[in-house]
Length: 424
Image (cartoon, rainbow, N blue to C red; front, side, top):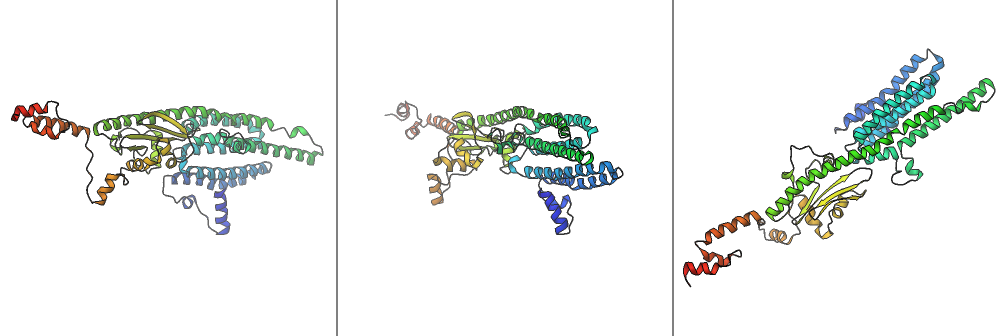
């Protein structure tokens, strides 16, 4: 309700009337979301007020429509708050569309159910409308939710983590069901009181009159749960695409090792710029300011790839030069887990992180001595250059075999070659 409180304080406390553009001053990509959502919540009260004025020509409907308008406006501000808070969380990057569609569906349920409760003639048609909207939305939940932690918590609350009441009540579906139950009970009590005041008697059946409407809508309310396992299948596809993309880079890094005697410090040159970045790796690079390949760590004799999977079973996938892919469930942050996920000891941390940043390890003995004596580092000899050097020395040694006295890769009969050239 922060958005509604802000409007009320601005109007009555500061005598100002801020519009959506005044609220959404952030120039990031979320500004368009913010303006659209805030505009809807901002203009809905005026639409409801205008409708109430028109319906005042039919006094019999005004009371019910005023109640419907109040509930709709409050729901609009509540879900606008939820959407803005959720999409502003960095951990929900990539799932903004899911958040928008899901909370819009929740708002639609509140509006449709309230209207069906207050206006009996529209119940059957509204049920079919909500059923159609739920079927379409469920497909959207699969595609945009993709079995994510956000999708799981919005549908199940914390029930998949711990089956206690506090966690279960975090589910938006449970919250909507409780809202519908409470509203139905209030309507039932109102019907009893109205009957008693007007007729002087109480008919208990009136209390349960709208429970049929409640049961119909509650069944449909649970339908989006089906989207979660299908979303998990989409997530499995995302994981396989990320693995396949990294496997291609790992082969290039391994080839580099055999050619140069060490693994590359950075992998920017190994990433195909024309290829579409997998969804999970794109999400990873969002947290590293768009820098490519930050899911790669290395030291001279080892590499490690690591990416986060924000699914219902939250955790990390890791691959090293010493083993195949492994999944580790963990809710901890990336900067706290990379040492463990890469099977590293604390001793190797400095080299691992310096290579990750494309830097020389400042704690390395040779590097420290080079800095101390202001001497440039000698680049490591590669296997290709070693092969070329060996070839040149052997060619030179055919006419000058004495060079083999100083070369470790000399032929076994080098003494005979010297004697043949120069005599004993």
